Image (cartoon, rainbow, N blue to C red; front, side, top):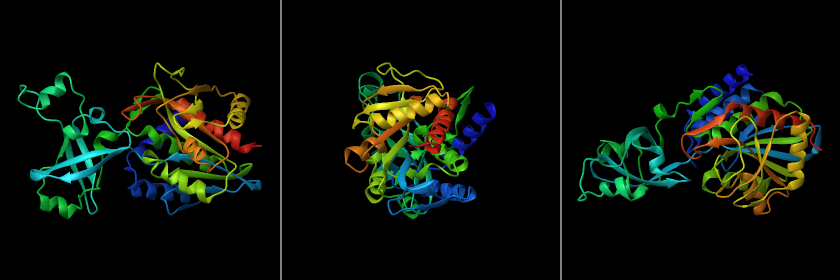
Length: 347
């Protein structure tokens, strides 16, 4: 088991170190296309930016998709100020106090520029706006800025402009191993993309035609998945996701994956969930069931808009979601094993 965990940790680490803020996902796309090719799997990028691998099944009249979004939360540049200061606003569910002061990368058209996400000095009185942040005011993106120490001309030459994406700097992103756990930014949803790659490696002939979709722009409205499901007729879609650990949900930390019955966008298909539960039982994989809020997936959004008749969401319990996330490598491995078993015998 430790060998499998080691491989997963290494695979996820490689994915995490490739930036992919929503809509600027070329770095991760190059890696995925290369890895799918090395596995000998037919793969392509569609017009919406989804990275899709196709596994022909024994029954080519039926089709299913497994999705894992490849984009990560971050920020988008709003304005370029004087003295190298750049103002940003959230892209997806990012919060400045989660990132903290430190290095961030601005992904310019011509060059990546590193800067410091800054909140201002603490040795101040009530005459300074930063004083309120120490006592009674939630830190907002409007109160923060990125300090680059670059001239406006240097930023322009790098292609830093309104619309440029900002993400946590690479030297802060490298995952940390805590025994059987992985801790990292962007486990949502790079760990799920690792599961897709595992399926591509292990699942040579599924029961039915299977699309492994590393979906684009999920964090800003499941745009990639909606495009794909609008153009590909499927009988079902299973989304791979993180699952938030919180006292309000009956979810335990550890190696047992979570199957959702409901999220903030609606209910999931009970018959499909039952099939997944039966596959888990047959494979002797523990599983948890939960209904959560403040959450959505490619599956629930695609089903809500009538793009797929059935959808499910399979996730791994995760601490600090949309922050420095922590998840058990066994839960990620069990998601892979469960889907492999399910797709081999899908009925």
